[in-house]
Length: 451
Image: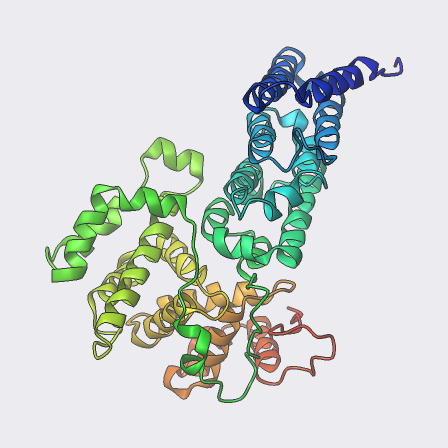
C-alpha cells in the first residue's frame, strides 16, 4: 500500500489554528470559524464511512482533530482550549462521530475523548460546566458497547474497546471520582446487568475529601455516621424525564394518600416495553424507567422521613411500592428492580443508608424464598468480581450475614450445592475477618475464588 501523506491534513490544521487566533477578529467570529472547521471534518468522515464501509480509514480524521486539540491547547490570549465554547465545539464533533454513527472511528474516537489536551480541560475548567459533555460522550460509547456486552459476544475488537473504556473509567475513579459520583445514574442506565465490574467501578467512587469508614469495623453504627444524613448530588436524565411523565403525578398521589389502591397492581404493566422495543433492548422491561422510579420513590421517602422523623420508613407508602414490586414482578423484572436498588448502595450518604435498609427489610419480610435468593444473588455477584467494591454494598451484605434477625444461613439456597456453599463461606470469611489493610485500600475485601 502507498505511504499515507498527512501534509494536507496538517496544513488544514495549521491554517484553522492561525485563523482562530487572529487578534483582530471578534471572538464570536473565531469561534464560529472553529465550529465550521470541525463540522467539515465530521461531515467528511461520515460521508467517507458511508461510501467506503469497512474500507474506511480513520487516521486522517484522527490526525485532524488531535492536531486541532493540540494547537488550541497552547495558552493564547486570543483563543485557546480553556474557552468553554471551544470545548463544546470539540465535544459536538465527537458526538457527531460517536461509534454508533461511525463504527470504524471507534478506537480513534475513544483516544480523542481521553486525549490529554481535551479530557482534563473538560473536567477541571469552568466549574464543572464540561461534565455534562463528558457524560454524554461516555454514554455514547456505553450505548455502542451495550448490545455486545449484553449478549457476551465479544470479538477481539469489541473486547479492546471495552478494555479502553474500562481504563478511562479507572482514570476517572482515581483522579475525578466526583464526576462518577454525580453521574452514576446516567452511566448505570447504559451498563447492562451482566457487566458487574464496570458498574462497580462507577458505584465505588466517593468524594476525595471523604474518608470512608472501615465497613469491617465490629458493631459499626452506620446510622450514627455524620455523612449518613447528607444528600448526594445526582445528575439523572431519566429521572428528569420521569418527573415530567404522567406516571409521576399518579405516583405522587399514591405516596401521599395511598390511593388509588390499584396503583401498585397496575404498575408492573406500565414498566413493560412494546414488543419491538423489548426485542431491541433485550428485555421486556423499561429499565431506565424502573431505575428512575426506584430513585424517585426513595428520594420522596427520605424527604418525608426528614419532615416527620417519628414516621417509620418500613410501614410507609414508598415501602409498599417496593414490597409490591418485589413480590409481584416476575423473575426478570425482580432482578432488574433489585439491581436498581443496589445501584444506590455507594459511599456514606442518606441514599445509601435508605436503600440498604430497603434491601434488608425486603429480605426480612419476604414471603417467598425466591425473593431472598434474588436479593442475595444481586449482592453476591457484585462482591465476587475484582475490586473495587462499593462501600454501601459491603455494609449491606455484612449486616445480612451477621445479624441473626435475617437468619441468612438458615435458608436452603445457601446450601443447595457444595460449590455454592463453599462460595458463601469464602465471601463470609472475607467479610467477617478481613486481612490487615497494609496496602492502604479502604473498604475492600479480598477476591473469593469460586470453585
